Length: 280
Image (tube, rainbow, N blue to C red; front, side, top):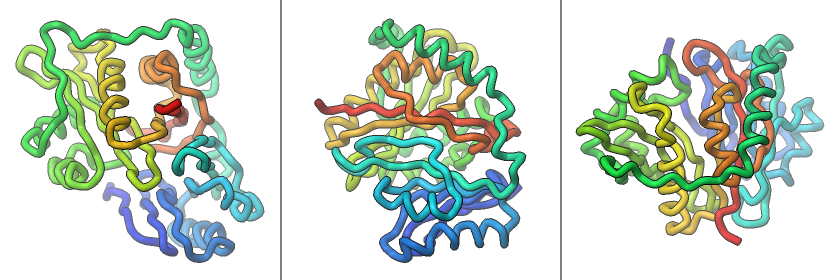
């Protein structure tokens, strides 16, 4: 199936296509504040998509709510220190609004609540090397992503995509073990809004269970904080005990859940939103 495309829309940016079967308003523009919610729904109907997902400043959420959207999650301090983001959904197919993993989702959250008081900063393993990746690592990074994920919402299995995002606003991190790339992640920064998405975590199967994601997240926070980032966040698979616990134990707050939002590993998955204020 072709990749979803990213393109301008009404002065902002959307990602859309049949892979995720949705429109994702990634960045809202300054144009058409009142007409944008309807325009997105109209485009979704024209293309036969079953969901519209919009990330907007909370002060602009009213027009979406009036147009039949509802708020699935929110992130305080997303746009600088004092402006929040609302993550809004409109389902054009009612069946997509029903979670298929509600019981597991709650089991994960129960585990997160139990683990929140057990914050431990994991050191880099003695035999490992943690570093920021460069364009020369793109092929190795993409090969690991291909191995770990059957499908993914963005083309991180393409070395050209990784090189392009490195040149823009994404820092990739890697942990080397035994001469191989054992675990990777990325921080996608919005330097204007001073936020960063902590994402694209992947660990080689043979290296799992060593809390390498926690090591990476610690390093990522330090890097983005040094670049002026105020708020970090993630959108994690709701059924993943490991990833959700990683964020919960490092002080992230739960911001909400996006139902059947993202096509990963052959199916639509619910996604949990976590956020953290990096400065006091």
